[in-house]
Length: 274
Image (tube, rainbow, N blue to C red; front, side, top):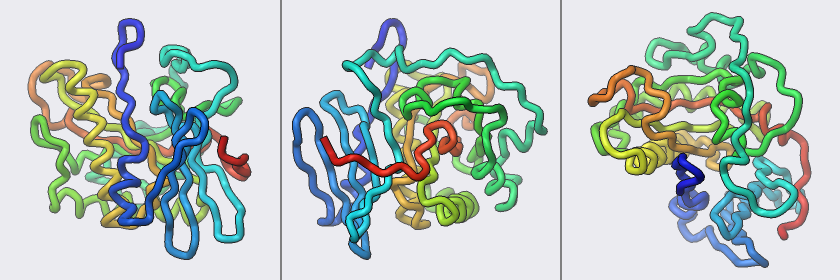
């Protein structure tokens, strides 16, 4: 979609869950929202609320005894607003840790380094809760969290397929994510997809979003990372790793970062679906 002079991608928030449902997935309309339910072993449900614009409102985990815990709360007060109002204008963070600990090069990192990056607090203080959309669309807000650059997966031009040999290389980051989720079941990780500069802005946004979703799907299907603890966003050819307008395998990549401290959902009980 286009907002002012900038293009943004907003995908179907339930696509990954439908693919994983295998009969345990259903949805219903309630007011202006679509509420979906994904049944999990042991009687748990993942409940997702999406509004008429396709915006994720809330995702929660409902237990067999009726308890419900929010994982992502993307709601805000007031009427619907354009995407550009979700962009938070912040100064760049003052990075006081070594660069290789701030952005971890996955290919050369061990599980300890990856886990540290995916469990560390913000590099500068965060003084309030932000919505998921504010995190998605605000680069300097995301920059307050460390990241892992998964440079073992570089896609073919125009492709969002993760090949079997590349999928196997996700084992280390999957183990780190699962360890973090065991420590805090409400952790949320943002998987960011990117392209090189070849092609149109709109096509590259869509392609990068598919790349992020493909990696999220592999993490769940192959390594049992809970899908509700993952969210994805494509950024197209923004934020090139290698400054070139030509084809670049290094720019066709995916990055993962922990965003839990930015959206601050720990311990919140979910209100009833609207």
